[in-house]
Length: 499
Image (cartoon, rainbow, N blue to C red; front, side):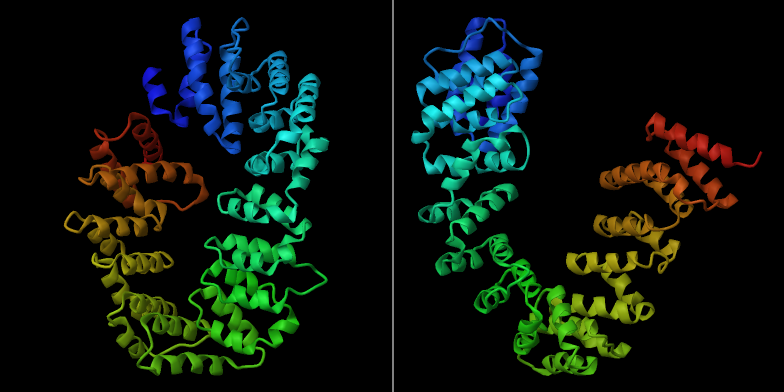
């Protein structure tokens, strides 16, 4: 415990709980001193987790004779989390007499207590200490306040509503804004509702700060709170949002445009045709297609590809956009882009080539699967081949699984193997349990467990050859397989052998 004391780390709290209930009074008191030192470092969300930990510990080690240090209010804070209702009531009453506003998160939890006497003591604490509670302490307790307003016995407490109403004061909006990035979803909803209630969300400087913040969810929440069914969002806010560098905010803003605003946003929609995010391009294509033909949309992407000064990003977007607007090239037209120096361009071309001419793209897909120098292209080729699991024969897949290939290629081939029929993959999976690669061995064993679990999902019957191959590989793998797994497969395969 002395070493734990020296670390001064809140992560040590769960390890100290058993010592708080230790038979030795000396150990209990020493553990309490350390806990008293660590408790002020906790935020509100950590206190709720600590409560469940202490409750669990208290129910196992409950020493009613142990008294917390009389001079330590931190000890009484800890006692508010006790399993004993009498102890919680006494602790809250003691904190009320000390008028320690730092106990706010602990006493807030007691507003939701299931013992009426403890709730009454919590109300008494607020009557004594409400004048000493700082606004920063209330903001820190936003997670607990949000939880109390949503459910539980604490939602009817006037003190909860009083604390929340203090957050609506316009002068504290900068403090709320600084607390938003580190807040959880529930806390953010509470803070935004109070900013809206106090009228702060109408402040142009605050709106600008939220829309340009590094966290796009703040801008999304702003638009969500300002948007109503009966009114449009202001044009200047939407314009700022759709020009954001964050795709999440751009996407949400576009979907908040009214029909009137969209009808006047042709120029903006035309720019969105070249958005890096596919959902934005699709959105723009859908609305522009009401007035422009698919051929016209395709021509805009084709013109962008002819501009020699276009960046690699613009080339990749143009290739994707052309095909997203129902365009398609001849096979040879993909070759210049498949050999482009930019991985991003090659990836876009390969995706579109496989979508438009899958059979002709197979050599390229196989080539990129075997390419270990470009993880991006290798993963893409594997994902495209998984859509057509029978495009490559089992002989090709097993050759990629051979030990001569790199581990990267073998793991990609394993993904294809798992997409094949259950009886096709079984002999290979059993063989891989003896592989030299530890990663492949673990994946094979995990897949065999899934294979057994999903056995009845497919009623495909194995051929005699497949059964015999599986039996042979199972016999070879017996030394390396767990006894339980081996017995399950042995019983299953034995039942399928001709009698």
